[in-house]
Length: 382
Image 1 (cartoon, rainbow, N blue to C red):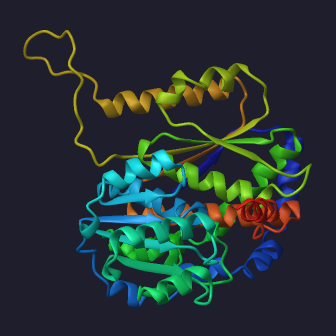
Image 2: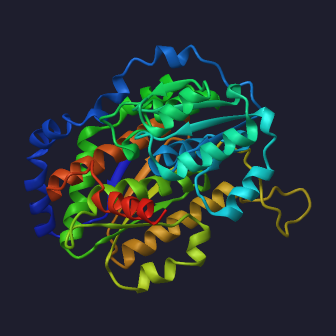
Image 3: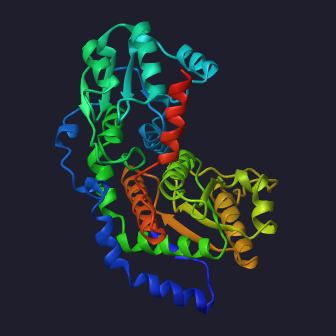
């Protein structure tokens, strides 16, 4: 993985150098967060599990209980094997339910607290519809919670998640790894990639983002030039929003754009609109797909000149050069390719980056008081 930055003036560089001198102290602070130990956790019991024999896996989880696995399933081409029941929109539930053959589906019920009302409601509905305990497993950090009691009542196996790890930092814990194993994703390769993530690089990225926020760039655009990283961007949106948005004056608004298609929807705003954004590009150096040439009006016997990868790479370079010419601030993250190991590295890098941001902003990245408030009001209305 290579990370490079757009140019900046001398004052910015001086402030950056000052922040970078605090790396060791801030590293010591975030080491107190339980998620930082996950890449070195013993997951032998997961390695001994096999890919699910069920034709389909349905994840009943919301927010941090599903977004990390969504990012993994899309990026590693497991979408055909999994479906996410992550909303209580009645039309959505009905449409998703129609896609399932109940007896051939394993339902994974995930709520770390065990009291997430959306997960509980969908779980109760499914148990009534399906009936058989063999079609269910549950993941929670509290057996005495409503989900824990529901599982016990219906003899559903329960796997314990780590209570001290917030959902949005849990993708490399059992919350993300157990379903990943059932999808055929090797947990040790994910964790190996996570161990390769650079702590200094994560801190440097946090410092850049922090300093740009101070300069008025309170919007961060995650801009993967890779369709399979679209849900990775969704995962990062939750991670950044819930971790940093804690006061009226502190909070970075994350949005996503996907290359190249969003060049035709939002690029105009990026280049000519308000200069209030910091951009993070992510681009693989190579692709798994066979290189296909684009047919052209060429004389017989001559080979076509360009492939789709040539076109894709040229479009990316064109946009990047336009950002340079218009003096936009950005970081470029180059990965060898999208793989299990690379995804482990990306996920942990951004978790570290957001944790470091929390120390720079002096906010607690592991709470979400406003979310809890809305949950209480929802329950009172019911």
